[in-house]
Structures are given as structure tokens and as C-alpha cells.
Image (cartoon, rainbow, N blue to C red; front, side, top):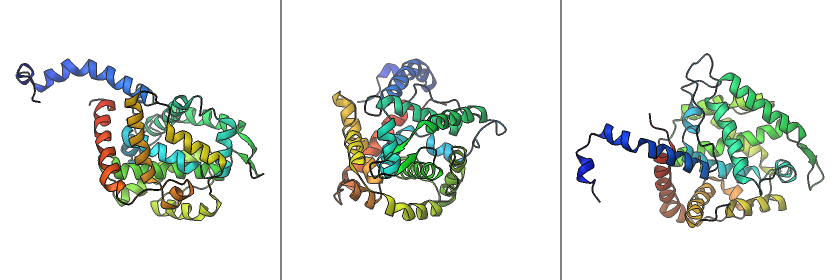
Length: 296
């Protein structure tokens, strides 16, 4: 269908002025429906005040909401494989009753620690550390856990950042180069250290080696399988929401390492990803990118 002749005669800038307010309202509605704040964090552009450098690789990755949604779901699936981390979520989180609220809080934290000022980022980090001090208990396997355990902080960080980066590479506007990928790990290491990690990878190779090292400690116990089922099911009730969630879930599963998919019993037929899932997810990301990204 072509552009109506009345609009065709109007300059593009004038069209943007006409549809701008409607697009802004739609963008805020879509962001809220996706479980993220209606308005993104205003980026700090002053290198002397920004927590992360304005031109950092982390800002490129975290600035693309559609691929971040897919990477975020993949991260939750991957994180569930650590029995101590999963015990903390199962015992202290109301993720089943307030899934969108939890997602919104996580998105705000990532926004402030990526795009915010030093003051904003440090305030967000203090809030998370305050919550972490209360999250402690005993896992089903009998081991004690604490959310402020430096090793658990590293695990959560690596599972999350590796998933965000993998999603950016596959579904983002432009893949990062090898140097940019290393820069991403170096950028985000500052957040993990501020949260209490004693060691975090600062290159892609270090992150890969870390995941290989911790694999023997990972498995999908009953709590992980319950979280898996919840994540696959989603919370949407409208047909459109469920259709979008189905594409996001399928795309997230393709990002998981083979061993993680096997542990979570998420088989992926060989031809489904390249022929169906990836094209569908890229199409969804393109549409969402136009809707949720502020102009300018």
C-alpha cells in the first residue's frame, strides 16, 4: 500500500512533526507492556560525570532494547542453572507474582549503571547491595547461600552479560568486532566489582574460560525447572502478547550454550533456528526498535 497522496506532498520533517506525539505515546505504552520503564534513562554525555564512558561498547549493547529483551530472557534461563543463585531467587523473589515489576527494576538498574551519572549508578548499586544483604538461606542441596557472595555476584554478572552480548551479535543492529566485545567486558566489569565481585572477566576469552570452569557446578534442579516453565509460559494473556513472547522465548533458547539447553531440556531441531527462529526474531526486533527507540 502506497503513501496517501496528501501525505506524499508533505515534507518528511512535517510528517514527523505530525506523527511524533502519537509515536511517543505508543512508545511509552509498548515499553510499559514489555516490563521496562516508560522512559529510558537520560544518557549522561559528560565523560567526567558518566559512570561508563559515553562512547562505550556497553552503551551500544544495552541501548538496543529489542535484543536486550531476548538476551535478558536467555540470561534468566542460564542463571537458573546455578543451584545457589536459583535458591536465592526461589526463596526471596516474588517473580511469579510480580514478573513485570522485577523486570522493570532490573531494567532500571542496567539503565542507571550504563547510561547514568556516577551518582545515579552508585545509588542504584547501593540499593541492590542492600537487598543482597537480606538474601541468604540454605539451598535444597544443603549448602548455605548469600546473594552478596563474591562468587555468586560473578556468576550472575557473567551469565547476564554473555547473554546480552550474544543477543546483540545475533539480533542487534550491528555485530561488535572482537575489540569491541573485549571492550564490553571491560566496561561492565566495573559494575560487577562495585556489587562485590572479587574477580570478573575483562575480555571475551576470559568469560568463555570462566563458563567452562564453572560448568561442573551447574545443573537444573527442581527450582530451576520451575523457573524454566514460568519463563517459557510468560505472563501475557492477550494473543498478541503471547505471540511476541513465543518469538522472544524461541530466540532466547537459541542463544544458550548447547550444554545449558540440554540441562534445561530445551531441544533445538537443527533447521528451526536458521530457517524460522532467527528471521522471525530479527523481524520482531526491527519493528520494536522503531517503536521503542526515542528519535534523535
